[in-house]
Amino acid sequence: MSKDRDLLRYSRQIPLLGEAGQERLSSSHVFIAGAGGLGSAVAFYMAAAGFGRITIVDCDSVEMSNLNRQILHGMKDLGRSKAISACESMRELNPVVETEPIIATIEADNIDKLLGDAELIVDALDSFDARFLLNRAANEREIPLFHGAISGFRGQATTVIPGRTACLRCIYPRHPRSTPSPALGSTCGIIGSIQVNEAVKYVGGKGRLLENRLAIWDGLASVLEEVEVDRDPDCPDCGSYRGR
Amino acid sequence: MKVNVVAFANFREILGKEIEVALPAGARLRDLLDLLAKSHLGLHEEVYEPTGALKDTAMIMLNRVNIDSQGGLDAALKEGDELAIFPPFAGG
Image 1 (cartoon, rainbow over the protein chains, first blue to last red):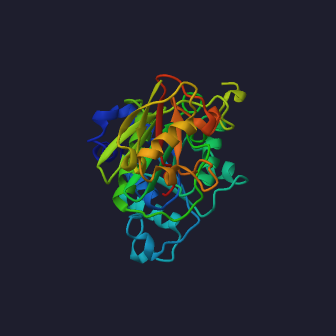
Image 2 (image 1 turned 120 degrees about the vertical axis):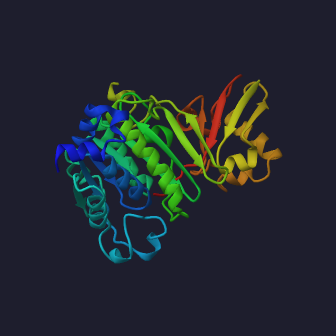
Image 3 (image 1 turned 120 degrees about the horizontal axis):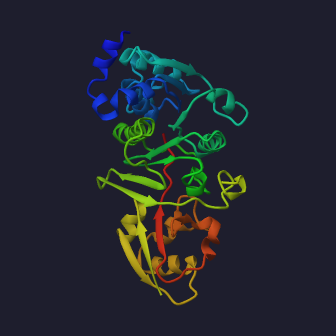
């Protein structure tokens, strides 16, 4: 792909980020945890924006009940790996992006290997148990975690910058057991888009991140608001015992 | 003393957006929730397990920090405290 064609592809966002900012996107390696509803919005917009290398992890295969919201996948993908289907969809959208599918469940003993040299983590998971693995890894590696979650018409997002912000466990020291929640594609689109917006701003050095702010989207009321949060000094994942 | 509570999502449907509550000196979080539950139908079931413990689906921040590390339901409140109550969405 020639540089001229890249410049044309990104010509409507380079005024926002500058060529240097676009270059930083193109040299970034992002890890997307989950290729479901949130992962669909996240992966499409990250690929379109030109994040240079995208690793996406999911252990599941595409099922009919996914198709109301998981727009990375279509009828032809039923029964196929979500991670592989996701990478095909991203490459079709933007062949410049290097994609890596990983078919795996994120667990304590494999997360380091899965993350590799990723510089940003996007949480598109559906359970807090797995999210806390991402949270701990982000804190240990001191790399940002872009959190999102949904249920029905509602969802939340925040950006965790280790050493600077409350982490996920500060905000959610308790969490509900994982049970399938109602899920709507448009809610995934809103929260996933916020996560990508945050990642673009982080890499591009633009704007004000959702640092120490939990954004809560109420799609029934059509209201987006924030809860201000602070680090818990006793947090087992990021607290003062870590010396920060 | 007075404290301010801001509610989100399902808790807003019960409490409204924001409510200022007058409490006796020395009140704790449990006292605040119990007082609110008397005048707001459905709140008790939304915040308490049958055992009386706080539900995992009720996150409460006291002055921006989760109450779990501030004594939970026994967290001591003081004049001007700001509380936020919201659910943890978990799906993806």
